[in-house]
Image 1 (cartoon, rainbow, N blue to C red):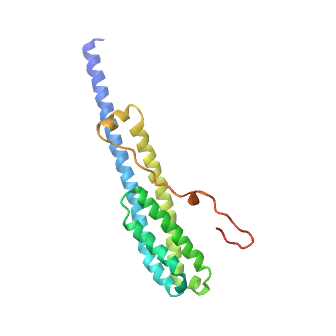
Image 2 (cartoon, helix red, strand yellow; image 1 turned 60 degrees about the horizontal axis):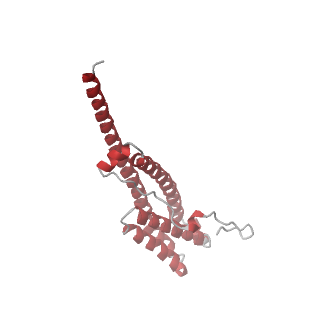
Image 3 (cartoon, rainbow, N blue to C red; image 1 turned 180 degrees about the vertical axis):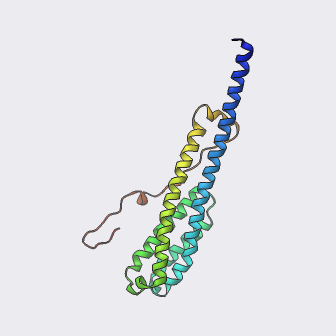
Length: 190
């Protein structure tokens, strides 16, 4: 074979690899943005339910004000979050506050029988499951993007066009990482 064909063929292959890698990085970045947006949408749904939940519970739990305030503070923290870490922290705070709210609600049989409360509790449970799935999807997408940004030779293209690794939607506190303790005597988990 003549070298006049080999050099252009190699250059064409390099250009095709470059284009393919760049387009793949763009796709991965867009998928990560979309996955994060899905989490944000679900968190918005959850927090839209909070005022309804608080107003339903308020009449029954007047002396449990700190639990209600914790739920409201969690919503405010989420609204003020500016990045993935703050958003994840607000999500974690809200999850704890809502769990506390439902745990305290166990002490109020009339509240547990209230149709609005039962409907909100069921809707929140569904949203929590969707949030968990959305977090997993986001983290899988971020892992794939981060791998492409860090792996040779796509890391050269990533560096050239300022593609950066992303943070995972992660649990921050040690308490949230540890398994809950179950007291078989009292029947409550801690």
